Length: 102
Image (tube, rainbow, N blue to C red; front, side, top):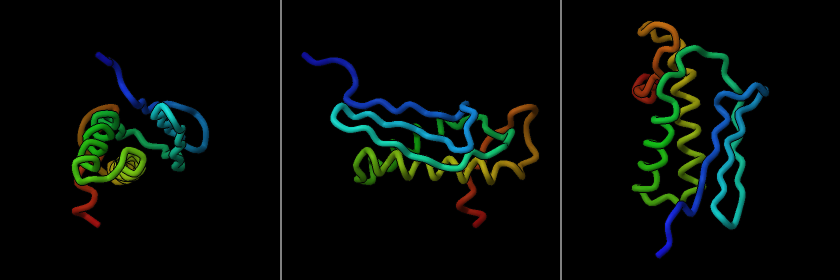
């Protein structure tokens, strides 16, 4: 019986470079997904949002690399939109409803 994961995503949210470089390793290939790093304080929930977005894109039939790419884009926009939210103390939440306000 086989245990473990067939893929792993290493996220770069707490890095220091000018870009965020999330890395997906699926056993056969390595994919790097880059976005400009945002200077924002409303970043609470990014990991949970990323995993939920990946799962939702997989459920819609996208393959894993495409799901990660779209999920990273969703989270990046949620962080950017969250900068204008006036809720919470310290690190506030990302704006999960950013698409509704476009």
